[in-house]
Length: 471
Ligand SMILES: C[S@@+](CC[C@H](N)C(=O)[O-])C[C@H]1O[C@@H](n2cnc3c(N)ncnc32)[C@H](O)[C@@H]1O
Image 1 (tube, protein in one colour):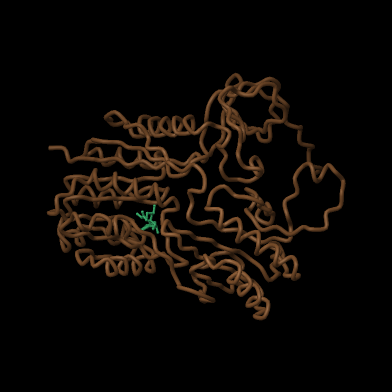
Image 2 (cartoon, rainbow, N blue to C red):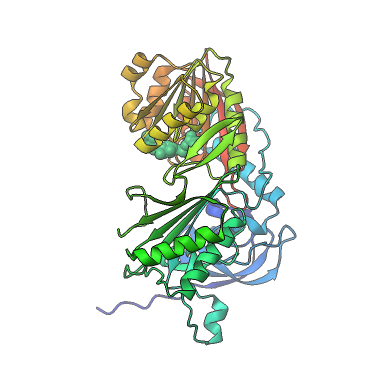
């Protein structure tokens, strides 16, 4: 049977954008239909081309602007609207953090359904550009073409790109001229690498057919001024690899750790690859209050270092430590929070499922002369159980910082069994945090709430909650 032709989706004219939705999109309403639209702000009046339609909601893109919102800010980045990052650049920063505060309030109220204290105003990030300490760029021989380039009808010879993936298109990469997220040294290194590769006929990765020499670069910076560059090659052409690495090493004496990796797997992850040192150290260090944290090429570290320090200070303050407490730091990563609170605690026990991160956590205690920490690797729901709690001793305080999915029911049950006096819940997803707070509500009341903005120009928000045991 012949397929029925799909009816084209309608164009809706003169629609006013009314609010902000999840994932950095905005919303408009038409009768009972809620429409989600990227790259617009409340107050814009636009024509909307629907791109997807379900019974109760639709997705659309703005194809014509009749009126720009008075709330609009000028996007500072030339890649705005094409690049998937920094979607909220067109909102003034004061508005961005107002919406983030609202997002926390809405989630905790609607999903949490528990009595809440007043939510403290969100702590904004002092730096709103160049705030990230890590970025990864991809090489591709299929550069993303802008609409203007396509319309021009010109034939473009240079199809190589070094930049970010276009959202939802794994083989298309936007060539980045300047990214405002990481210290400008990052732009200089990336542009020089691209220039050298083009001038010397290095092949850029073909993501679909899996061939080409140059695959990715990862740049990490630290507040102490150290710079790590990791170059990931797909093909094993040692002469070309060494030529590029020595060129970059000569051009950028700022690079304190120049590393490279051969990755011939189908996917980009480097966790199971050997990292080779071309020049300098195999790690960089971040510092907080005189404490040093080792960051290896595979280690997790919060990507906004300055704001991570503020976040950790809030968590430590909420924990109310006097030096006599046994603290559990759940989802400890490389033990940053555990080590950060160790000097104010009797003992800190950190749990995390990435074994390499736990090794880093132990090193971080060692290099800082901290000897009251213990670290365990494994899945939280398997490790944190009544036997473990009885063996290690009940915690006075639990600090928990789970991934976006929040905590497993078994972990919540174990926390309720452990019955610490205080729980400090750090979350990057207020929706799952609200769900977990509801479950913890069986024995705890929420005493303080402090949202923190770690990622300006994005919709992401971090939230710290203090829970106290009810008697
Ligand atoms: C948001 S990060 C917190 C990192 C750390 N607190 C910090 O500030 O650097 C969440 C951590 O939870 C770990 N993780 C995720 N799922 C886990 C699980 N089921 N069991 C144990 N750890 C897990 C991740 O590997 C990651 O290190």
